[in-house]
Image 1 (tube, rainbow, N blue to C red):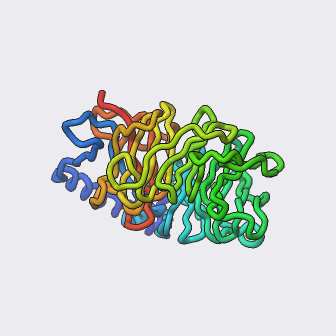
Image 2 (image 1 turned 120 degrees about the vertical axis):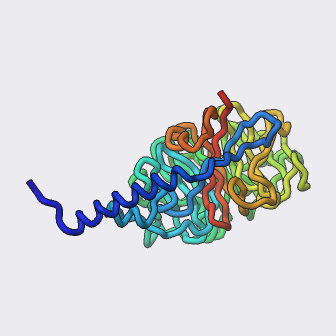
Image 3 (image 1 turned 180 degrees about the vertical axis):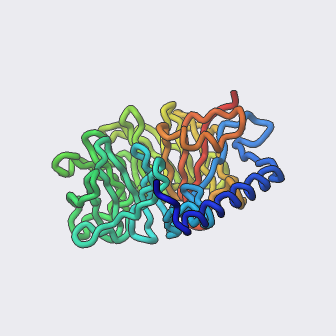
Length: 357
């Protein structure tokens, strides 16, 4: 039988003290205030759950507990996040400030800061997508390319020749790669297998309604329709899978239903459309016909639940169990919403879309 050494004994003693302190604090703690959207008296549909900005805050670690338990957790912060997506239990965050993709593993409470040297090195990553096979796609503004990495994080290829485009928005389907090109005011559509350019949106048919200015962010719905968040045009434009214009949402302004600096965009399984606005610091939610339903993010406010120069957004149906513990009693989370903040201490804010039981 192995006897504990002196360090282990000391840590066990400190752990006992810590547990006692926590129990004492819990008995005197204030009741938690839950933040819902829309606010009362409307029926709540979203709740602010939590946020993280580093590996330590991802797992809720505390330095004293880490010392007592002998764990090693990084304090390196997420610097300036933009695009965000989810695959399995991992959240992928484009950190333009650190020139990396920060990969948060929810099951392990770990944050991996991914970049490579040499041919596959990122310079200014903006948006990120992951396909069903775990292949990683990153738009890099400084390189003017889409960088592609395997599920094992090996560099595979790049799309785009020198000065050919300025890629920003990104979406991936089973057979195609959609890239928002800021220089050419278009969305370039590539074959996923051989990376050949198939066509560009808008189509060359002279349809003024389809015109794009700065297609900064893209997403696809379950029917394969393409949604383009056009920051330069102050609207969202919707196209079918062949690039034919369907309709647009919004116009310039800072009132609800309008956009002033629209960026990230997402569509849920009910075809509700979520649009981030960095200027009004809210996320607006529209129905499939483009009618405003509600918003969240405490526009122009600060503190818990607020957004700070928000940029990217992603929806997650697969990891609700990791965050249900943050939900208010009687509030059932249907799916999660991740929003990146480029400033402040809440670099990735997490909301739950749901309903009261």
